[in-house]
Image (cartoon, rainbow, N blue to C red):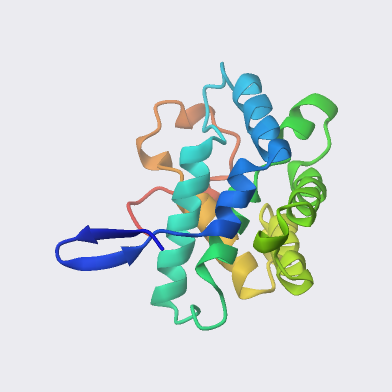
Length: 179
């Protein structure tokens, strides 16, 4: 396992199941499509930085809320990396991205290398969180609640120059620096 030494501490970096998602050809194709479709977007983009910010916020919140015993770091990161993967389908076919995202995430998770497979229960948990991330009322599992909050908190609405034109309801905008 690769380690990063920082201030005398060792931090594990390996997450082979998350890396398998990153390397998956369907995942890469979808990210490229999203990037092209959002190239001229003035509002928040759904790029790798957003996905990683959401993952990190989810993991921090999981630690702070004592949820790490029931959630593995790679399941949290996989969920965040996959949660907006349906954006291209939304832009091109008007299919809601949460619904398209569940379909695409299942395809990706179901076809990763055998040594990096997610269990059926993990796939269901991840798919449920992706499907519930737009509307917090459907976020019934801890993972879904973490994703719903992190998706909103990863956006610095308080510093956005086009915020007055944003169609997000103000109660969903991140208007303070917080995690």
